[in-house]
Image (cartoon, rainbow, N blue to C red; front, side, top):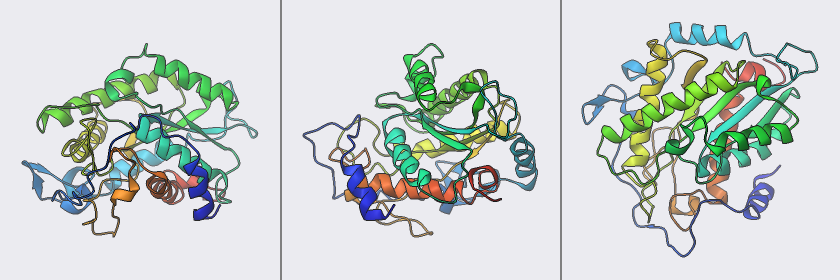
Length: 311
């Protein structure tokens, strides 16, 4: 689907969770924080950057090798979870309003992309208004809605083998690093739920928030949007160092950039990429994140072999 066509389609899809009657703070085009991918071994309030330990933006050879071991278990499976030539590999999203808006746009792109394997079923389990504090409860209604969406897609829990997880805490007030530690603890709890609900889950890819400098509400502005990157970084480090068990856990695409100031790879985030609240993505913003997701799943060494037609 061409960009203009998809943008037109996205304009017709309501963005859950975006309040009306507000105007983005379009004058705040940057906040001066350094994206984690550019920070390297330099520090933010004493904590080093990079997506992985040591200021790195990619997993160590040892952790990548561990991931390849989990990758070997990703294969088409029937409803009973057993490998089947006619089975499915389910990629499921888990998260809040921004996550469902971005992942639904990604699903539209990916389902029309000839590179996507026909055995892959993409299911958007993320839901508006469902922040990390809510879904860390295994009894939350969020999880029954995910079950329903899997059923509607014609797949089951035993076929879920990869998850994209993006979460935040609504209206945070704690200073760094307490805000990031709180989200880290929530992410750990959510990963425990995933491990229990999806016995064949092999790979979990996490992303943090997009730029929040245009926000006009307390939902998740800066510096909390930026700080969420450390919550993800520390959660991944927990898995690397054995403080978490279950599926391999690593980064999906890193979505934060310093507004129009951007980052070294050229990625920027403009006011027009957000809706009127400056927090939720506009159709153009949703498409831009969808493109980052598609690039990730068609190129990452732990995603490309099962997501694409050929490895």
